[in-house]
Each structure stands twice: as C-alpha cells, then as structure tokens.
Length: 103
Image (tube, rainbow, N blue to C red; front, side, top):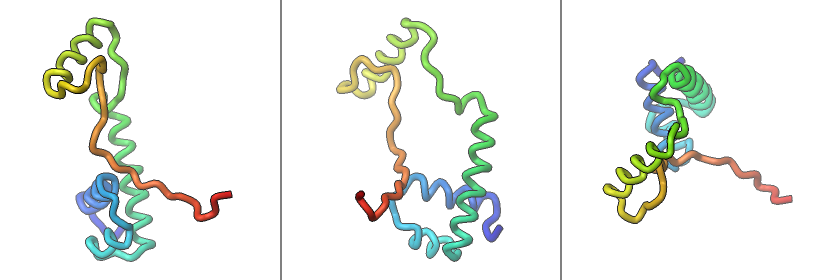
C-alpha cells in the first residue's frame, strides 16, 4: 500500500463525504488512479470489518413504542420541523457511477 493506515482512512472518509472527482483525490493524496482504487478498496474493507465488530455502529430499530416516542421528542426539540420520526441520517454523500448508455 502506498498510504499508511491513517492515510487510507483519510482517503476513504474524504471520498465518502465529498462529491469531488477521483482525479482530485489522486492529486490531493499524490497517488495514481490504480493505487487510488486499490487503497480505497482496502480501506473500505478494513473499515467495514471494524464497524461490523462494534456494537455501537449497528443500526437497529427501537425496541418499544416508548423509545420511539422518546427519540422523536428529542429530535423534535433540536429540529422542530422533523416530527413523528425516531431517527434520520444526514451528511453522507456516496458517489454513484452511472452508465453512459441509457438503454
């Protein structure tokens, strides 16, 4: 790997949280396209294996209606326009590849 563990994590988190083109990431991290692809895949696999082992990173539904109501009230205190919800996700931009051929 051309990037160490912190560098690989930085590359992956930067890629996940921005919408910039991959060539810009390659310039920022001073790596070639092939190395960028390999390091992204490696960092993704490492992060995925760590997150799978952490209970706090798991997504789960509230177990009771009372918990749903509690979470909803806490969210509505901070975000008054969000009502009747017990959770939401914000701030993640995941790049999506789209085929040029629309057929």
